Amino acid sequence: MNNTEQWKRDGFKGETMIVLPTESFQDYVEHPQVRRLYLTDVGFFPRAEHHYRERKDGIEEYILIYCTEGSGFIVVDGKEYILHENEAFCIPQYHGHRYYACEDDPWSILWVHFKGEDIKYFPLQECNVISFSSQNATNRMLFLFELLFRVLEANYTLGNFIYISQVLSLILAETYDREKHNTTLEQNKHVTNVVRFMYKHLEENLTLEEVAAEFELSKSYLNAIFQKYTQHAPMDFFINIKMKSACRLLKTTDLYIYEVAQKLGYGDQYYFSRIFKKVVGISPKAYKNGDYFHYKE
Image 1: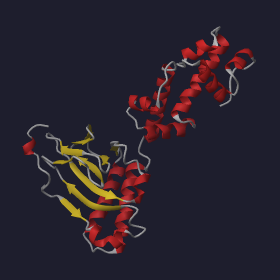
Image 2 (image 1 turned 90 degrees about the vertical axis):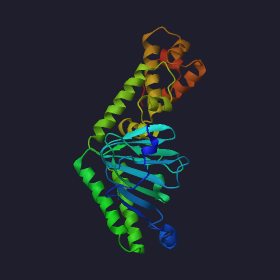
Image 3 (image 1 turned 30 degrees about the vertical axis):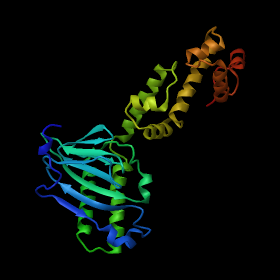
């Protein structure tokens, strides 16, 4: 980033920024309906030219940034993400970060700092850019933030704290839980591509980390879509197709069992045999010599 001295932290024409004095209303914060999820700060920075913020050690709240126009950059633990119009990103608590507006097309952002007991139910540690591909989804996000501002400008009552907590929960649900436009198609594409990748690398001992990194997907997302479409975890699926290939090689070639094992990336024949028996139900030797042509998954 060039000309760092030109960047500024905040102070934009038309900005809105509200800090909720949670320390002064600790009884409200500890209420069962509030402590689950509550915000500490919320704001809107329109066309935030030269906007820059850096926190080397992070902060105790999570930070959700929703870009309404323009673009900007977010760096978390040294990895850079680009945020465009109608995209959101959550910076996890206690993670060093910085974020700044694009020089040529500075972003407008809605943002909120929050914490609470229910954060564990959202994938806030994964650092994914979330896209809102429909106008309806965009309108819902704008409406929900508008609700926050409206209520925060009213009196500090327990009822309003509860209401704010519920609206914040809806914002996170809209971001992470609501089915996005074309999500199913995108998930199918990811599963298809990963399965093809697995078939091309049957001779290797792939790990979940390697597969996820190859397709730039989080491990939890990869697990979720495989369970949804194949009823298997990714690496269980990989082992299953390895064993199907082993069955084919045992029946259609003269390869010894140790040679089949080597072809499928297993240097230890006995380990291969244990995996084979666990998946197929019988030993490789019994399968090769018996009247078996498939196994039931």
